[in-house]
Amino acid sequence: MTSAADRSRVPAGITTGGQFATQARGEAAVDLTGPAGLPAADQLDAALARLGIDEVPTGVDGVPFTEHWATRFAALGEPEPPRAVDEVARQVSGVVDPERIKGEPNAVLAHPRPPLGGKPRVEWSTLQHFPDPTSLMHGAKVAGYVHLTGRNLPAELVAHPRYLGVDLEADARWSDEPDPTDVTVLIELDLDDDALTDALARRDERRSWEQSRALADDIATGKVAPWSICPVNADTKALIDAEHAASRARVEPMSREHESDLGTRDSRRLNRADLQRVTATLSYLRGESDEEPQTHYNDPIWGIANHVRAGREHREKVAKAAVSQAGLDLAADPSTDPQVLAALEEVGAVRDWNTRVRWAAQSQKRIDTCIAEVSAAADDLSRMVDERDERAAHADRAKDLAWALRWPGPSDECPDAPDGARGGTEPSWG
Image (cartoon, rainbow, N blue to C red; front, side, top):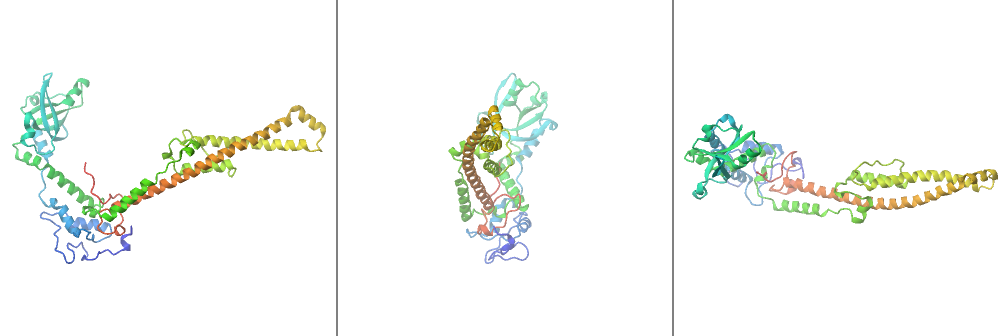
């Protein structure tokens, strides 16, 4: 992508005055501030200034970026919805000792069960939405799910009319662990409390508000692209899909015949450092280098140690054969003293020299085989590593393009992503 300095800072059709403009030329003004201080010009200006640009161009949908911004964060212009957990905690604290509450209570749907061993029991399920009358059938109740420190439950808590019982899973743990560090109880919540009713009914609205608030903050701090609120750019998505397809296509593992040459344990673990060791082994076997390659225990290419050892033994045999050949030349020289020849024959020196020369010749054949195997494997490994690097390059390119996924203009005009920034999509909300 080109840097901000390489292109105009102000797209065509947008007016500026040193600050972020709230309207496009020839279009109706869009109020970014919202009815109650919607985060707009201040946060947006900071995010754009950090990227070295003044504006985000209008996309192919014809909707100005300012309008996308105002629509996406309209919820932040409304009064902040109440948090259900706050009201749950308030009601639970009225029944149990607040000093014993561990973590944040949560609202669940409780299903009382027959007592076991004199202890009230209850199962529970997640309360996804404000319960309608059908969800409260068969004795189900909205309850606060709360962890308490310590095992013992006060008698006044057990006798409290809103105490529903112990979590069944925690109850089962009691039989295995006589002294658990905490206990989980469920307390019935008073749905007549207007604040609780409102908080539960607006739970989804609260979650959406928190997501909008977090996204606005991430944009302001540069973690997320400001244009992540825009529709996906079809042209950029096609480029990303093509890069991913190219990345997936560049997967050619070592062929079976060459995998057995070096006995690689897992070709996916091999990298350029392994390729360098294989290349060094090849040079050592060919006699181009006197430095013996280093191998180690549990080497991912376990066959390489066998080839290095063969090369070392071959060099020893060749050195001995050279000395032996000098002796044989001496014995074949007509000018050699016959008494010396007789002495050599008597101790078997000529026979030993011939044996060593023959061993060196046999070792050379073995080394030729090793060279052929390692050479073929090195070529295969080189191709595999090159293709892996090419695949990584495609993946990196796709990652870079993800930052421009929702950029309204051409991807090569999108500002470069700062370090630590996420792509042009909204973050995942777990």
